[in-house]
Amino acid sequence: MVRLKIFVHDHFTSFRTILLAFLCLIVVGAFLLSLPISSASGQTTNFLDALFTSSSAVCVTGLIVRDTATHWSFFGQFIILLLIQFGGLGVITIAITTLIFTGRRIGIMQRSTMQDAISAPQIGGIVRFTKFIFLGTILIELLGACLLSTVFIKDYGWLRGTWLSIFHSISAFCNAGFDLLGQSGNQTSLMPYANNPIICITICLLIVAGGIGFLTWRDLIDEKFQYKTVRLQTKIVLLTTFWLILLSFLYFYFIEFTQYQFQDRFLIALFQSITPRTAGFSTINYATMSQGGLLITILLMVIGGAPGSTAGGIKVTSLFVLVAFTNAFIRKKDDVNFSQRRIGIEVVAHAIAILFIYFFLLILGGHVLASVEKLDLLVALFECASALGTVGLSTGITADLSEISKLILISFMWFGRIGVLTIAYATIRTANKVPSRFPTEKIVIG
Image (cartoon, rainbow, N blue to C red; front, side, top):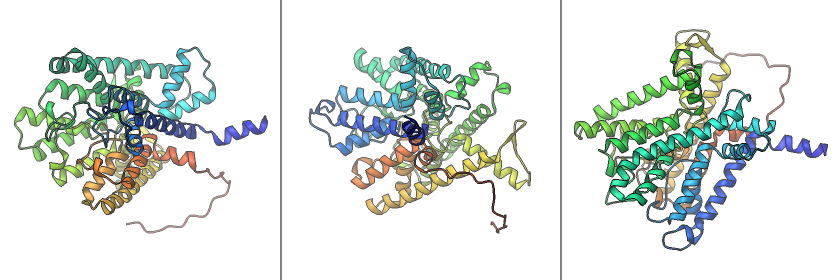
């Protein structure tokens, strides 16, 4: 019995539990999607394509190799929606929520796993926070569906319009980017509604609501939306999110989309400044975007959203810490300070490690895709950044990729959703700390 407890403690850490939970959900989803009942034609779907779709849904990415609207039956679309919801909230969150509502006792191991799964600052109050996440998600998604239904029901009737409203609301809040509008000529995703303010603004609000994270919402509500009294992380998330949206909007509005009229250009620029931050919807064809626009979009995809959210990427907090650290270093300051608080050097090291790993994987994957598929390097980097940042935007090449490229993107979506450091903590055995340290020796940098 003692040996068994030691084995469980050593091998089933919270990080490994999170990793295996997502992996199991992806495999189960792939099996269900490969069944004949899941396709509109009633035929079995190639397992790799089913695995790709399941990975994209669970990892709330939105990259597809089969058109969601036409290839999948209602059963298949419903399975995809469940995978999006489970992946957006997190498998662990769903499991803990089920235990809560069935009256089961939540042990310390489950609380610790939940803390790591949602990046909560402390284990205390984690059960109440889980309830807040679940109920808040349902409320926001229902509100979003109601707003979207004012357009979709008018265009598609009550039955299909309601289904489209629910599906797109969940997909937007979970930052998934899956859509059911299908392809009409050269138009895909939300392109038919590029000039519709209700659809565009509602989707944008849902994306931002899911992307700033549950920790941010909890803090804002507790502090009655008073910016001065919220935690440092909340201030950083809100401030960085605001500036990223504003600066990218100005670029898209004044440089990239000058060919559109005022109202259309405003909505298109706003939408494209928000959706690359891991949502995956689009109201324009990215294959026609300039190289500068593609590069800006790649950077936005790499950055992503906030910790403890439905978004991927290196997170806005990592970007802020790196910028603040660079500013402090240039000014020869000993500490990284913001809002009368000091940011610890271990946080800076964490952000640097994440940035290095993401860019290493991005460049490696981009070169492999460019070589295997004979693609322009920027296009290959765009596809890899979309998968790694769990975004789902594409220049239209995903369905035509080879098996090896699809497997690379599947692994990137998995890395991006779980987090590369979570995977590292789960798979690499941490060395025991030793009391002694090696002597320091200076090296020249720059």
